[in-house]
Amino acid sequence: MILNNRIVLITGGARGVGRSIAQTCAKEGAQLVIADILAEQGEETAAALRADGAQCRFLPVDLANPQSIEALANDIRAHEGRLDGLVNNAAIATNVGGKMFDDIDIDLWDRVMQVNIRGTWLVTRAMSPLLGAGSQIVNLASDTALWGAPRLLAYVASKGAVMSMTRSLARELGPRKIGVVAVAPGIMRNEATEYVPAERHQLYETGRAAPGPQLPEDITDAIAFLLTPGALCLTGQVLPVDAGFVFN
Image (cartoon, rainbow, N blue to C red):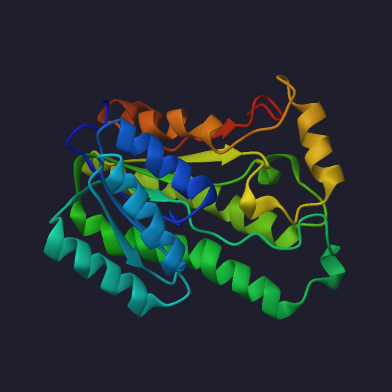
């Protein structure tokens, strides 16, 4: 129960990786707030976690809307009063194995940057007053930004920015004894990646040092540890958690 009595917010917690992170954190004793734009699925996930004995609330949020993020922070301030952990998981990934850099629509580029970069910054900014000494922030990046995945430029650029943001935030929040790390998984097998071309899945599954598919639950134990006060010594680091597809 390494997260016992710790209050953790997980964005993008309604399904996929976010839901798996929430399940693992709940097993480790965390009190959870999950936030997502997918309200129906978010409520279902929260209800399932409560049925298993967890303390969990669902709150809607749209990372493209600063007012929605502020409303989320105000609700947590009024009900939980503090946060001990923040997992910036919510993001959009489009066009995997799709268009080349000179074919990407400007509207698509702007949408990815708005959610993945600006949204991560705005959530961190809104929640930081609720974080005290010993708190941890975990940003979900992607190993695509470590090896330069082709035909995915908007997403790769956004996750590279999340990695750089992690390092600067670690410097700024470190004096408050708040740690900030980035986890960089590879492509996983879940409902959120069903649209990914089969050849991209095959590239990963044969190219890992420990070959095979990666499931969301394969990264969640690492994230649970990174939400503990003992992970402060890792602040500013980008940790590939992808069974050895890339080494950093």
